[in-house]
Amino acid sequence: MGEPLYELDQAGLAALAEARAGTSGGSVTGGDLVLLYHYEGFMDAGHAAEQVVDHIFGERFQFEGAGEHGEPGNPVLARFDTDRLVDYRAQRPTMTFDTDRWSEYEAPRLEVKLAHDAIGTPFLVMYGPEPDTEWERFSAAMVEMIERLGVTLSVNFHGIPFAVPHTRPTTLIPHGNRRDLLAGYTAWFDRAQVPGSAMALVEFRLSEREHAVLGLAAQIPHYISRSPYPAAAVRILEAITSATGLVLPVQELHEQAQRVEAEIEAQVAQGDDDLRSMIRGLEVQYDTVAGTTPQADLLAEQAARIPTAEELARQFEQFLAEQDRDGEH
Image (cartoon, rainbow, N blue to C red; front, side, top):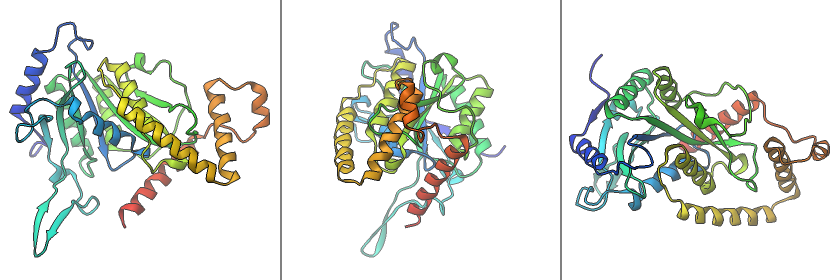
């Protein structure tokens, strides 16, 4: 089997044990332990997952004195071997050249950290580069780690480009094996073959082992999918709160979402008629699927329709190709 792909940090484990011991028996999570995870580099339209992680790693959800120099921080529970998992030629780490020498190297980190919600309930967050290699061994290591740490629900999240308008609420596509957590969401399509990811494979392997897992894909308007879209991060965090009972206030992100919406509206107002016509068509399509548009409106807008599985796959592949081109410059 070779060397293990991860190692547990004893100080982090002690911090987790202390945090769980200090949690009230009447906690809304009932003693459960939630893991939130996302791997950067594959698919995150609207920077949705990135904003969620940045928000969670804000000072509000850190532990006092847990930082390297005694400042607030998030203790590390597990570190994965990025030297085995990351192809440095595909994801080149940053190095700093200072006058006549190399002064700094930013090694990639794929870690599990400890955080707490607004009422002190501990939970885990995993973030870092998506592994380029050994996906099966990595998935097996994830399953093993989740069992060792006693995780009761794993939740992954990201943004996907979709034919939806920015003028409507952000919609989620949920997936996983917790059927009770999937109820109440609009079904946008039935079946699609899309490029795979390590995050999706981990969910698949967790389901096979009957570990509770939930995925949340936020639909990002395709015409702004490469720009930060805080409304999606708000929607993901609200869904996490609903599914897990964790209390994760989103006021700052909500204010950012309002500012971004105003900026988009200003740009649309300055745009051409084709852009505005496209958005109107997307609004009719959205309202149709959500069940809020009278049938008469459908006859007036023949162009409004749900994307097919093949079209959805092409959207994903185009988004990934654009990301790859950006990374080459």
